Length: 314
Ligand SMILES: NC(=O)c1ccc[n+]([C@@H]2O[C@H](COP(=O)([O-])OP(=O)(O)OC[C@H]3O[C@@H](n4cnc5c(N)ncnc54)[C@H](O)[C@@H]3O)[C@@H](O)[C@H]2O)c1
Image (tube, rainbow, N blue to C red):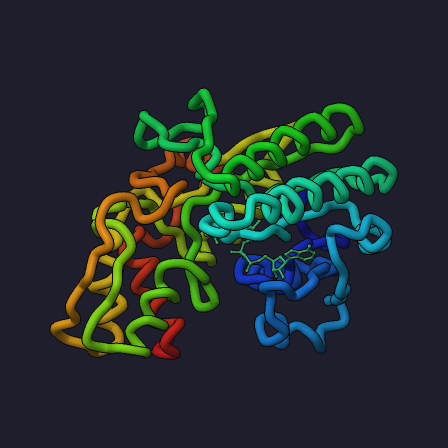
């Protein structure tokens, strides 16, 4: 369905990707209902939209079914981004991704069963592929064997979204995002910046620095999200990433360089960065390409832009 002049629920709309997506949907004439519990979302991310009459903020929790059902009122489509996206957390807290991702998605789907919505977009992740043996990895790759509890939760959600959509008559877009970065991104760029602000002479890098992944700027991610949603008939999975990849040491060079630091001593912890980390990730984006989408930035450019934005240079 066309995401124009509609009323759309964005769960996790006050988060990093969510806030950018809400702004884009408003610019397309939609009414946007942003549902968020601000566990990682921030008021400052949505502040520019608060005065827009077409933007409605609901503070609510995905784990409270009645609040989710209320938020859906009058919405024809849902973009479901609310989740706990902290992959590493699964090592120490084995419940969080089950509750915040799987149960939260179940609550949304249950509410949609009776809500009359026509479409759901689910923010999945490249981590559903686990340590894939085919690069770039196409959507049809299998078996899907995630190596993190976060990845397992995303795969479980994909399965639920697919089955609910088939049983209860709405269409569904499953988006397997690569690493998305931008001004408000969490993850490696923010981590490096914070460490370097504390001590500009040295930088601890988890692993051996050769982990190599695809990075996508959030502006490209948002465009792909809308285009894929508008081109889904029943249930479709799409990879959303850049065409190339970048290693962690290169990212350290970009962050320290943009911060104006020279001679930073890199201290690698060695081996796998953490249990559940993927060493190599590159997605085949041919399927999105057939819809006419192409990321405007490659991985290096995207990281560079995100770091400059984060530092207030852009
Ligand atoms: N950023 C990436 O690189 C990336 C990559 C792959 C997939 N994703 C997925 O995209 C989505 C958005 O990611 P993001 O990077 O913007 O993360 P984020 O943490 O900035 O956004 C998640 C939002 O969901 C909200 N939220 C969490 N639990 C909630 C709950 N129980 N009830 C209501 N709101 C809740 C948070 O407050 C936050 O605003 C997530 O589903 C994430 O798993 C992100």
